[in-house]
Image 1 (cartoon, rainbow, N blue to C red):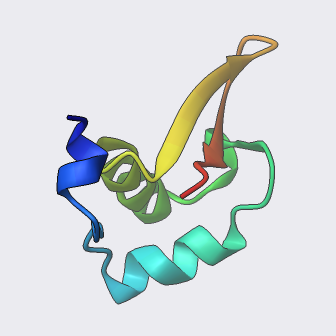
Image 2: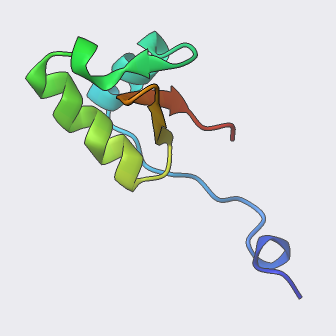
Length: 67
């Protein structure tokens, strides 16, 4: 039996600040283009597996994960 079969409704807690920043991420965006506070929030979203960090042309990029 798989874990997703046991857990039917799985949700990740996201703060309002994280939600508003997550709405601004469309496609691949350089992490350095965000302000320092926003980078901290994005790192929290990376830890929660909501956003992925990708290395592209020697630049750190971020993108949303599909739910």
